[in-house]
Image (cartoon, rainbow, N blue to C red; front, side):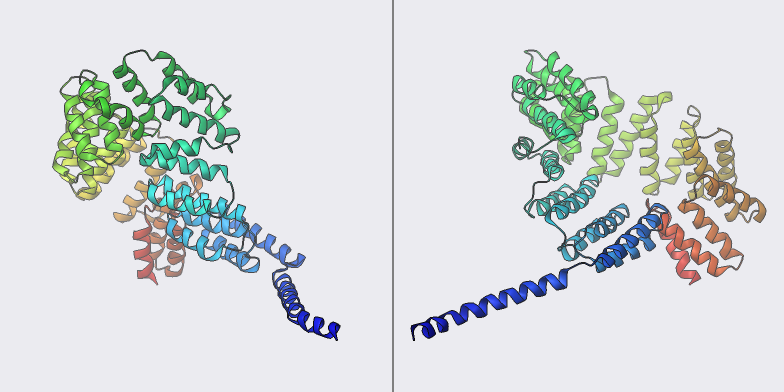
Length: 485
């Protein structure tokens, strides 16, 4: 009798064990990956990678998606999908897919993918979204040293210096990551304690990648003295040049009223504010520094950028003009390109033409002639377009400028109803230099469309859009594609 009663008490437990066992068996059966499925997955990944390296991104994506559907627990397909999306500038789509579709892969692999997407946001200077993405990767519960290091870098970019220091102090970094974490921790410590910074910098032997940075900073630390204003100015140069303006603000702002005799100190504080997006403060400090004499072109260039940040175009133009004037015949490539771009982007074409006429007297360089072509396209001055194309061709340009020359020459011939044979010859030369050149396929599509080859033109426009990672001609190609189809 007691045995029967005992058995009845055990029945619920027996049922529970059977249910759990059944569920476990069902889970194992439904999630078991066969060798045939693995082989098929590997084949699809291989096809996808072949298409990826051929820049056939749409086809590559198709294979990656097929592989992901086949075995959603493997990381390779998702890595390929997210890589293509971030290369196309579609970070939000990449994050969405990671959050919604890639949850069956291992936690270690999820952390790697969150790092991939977070890095894309970081490279775009979207530090809030980068931190949010890295934190999600941190939340999967594994230690990924690259992800942890990037969280520290984001904190430092955002000016959260204490949080950054805590990240770099973690005892989990190795090799290059260890070298970088110690260097950045030393940067932070140097803003308040030079000896501690020296100790941290000397605590590891840097990897080859970071050796030059260690040597530079060790030299700077060794040159510091008892003059706190001098020290702050010298450290700020390192901080800003390496992309961490918040540290420059941290050391210079407390002694703002004391560094007035250090033109570099005032300038670096203005630069730091500029790069932190504090444009009003930047203009204020840069105005102070320009009155001290010296470094006028750098100061005015920084002021121009600050005014652009404040949406004060007229003040920005005035500062750009003065910066260009101070540089004179030694006009820098970066300043010229930036100023020309500002003028054309804001439809100040005549002012851009005035600048061009001044600059071209002193600067005989391919990039100036390319701007000459662009400006005169905006002015619809055919003679000047052809003039600058000829000048560009005579400079014996390097590969990058040669591609630009061939593109503009073919475009001008098309726009001016040039000889088909000559257009084809120029396009063939462009293709021979770069078989994945988006601009080539865009112009080829135009030529085919004008010759009545609508199907071929549509295919060319699609390739142009596919290969256009820089979004140079995508809008125009999309518009013409819709007309063809």
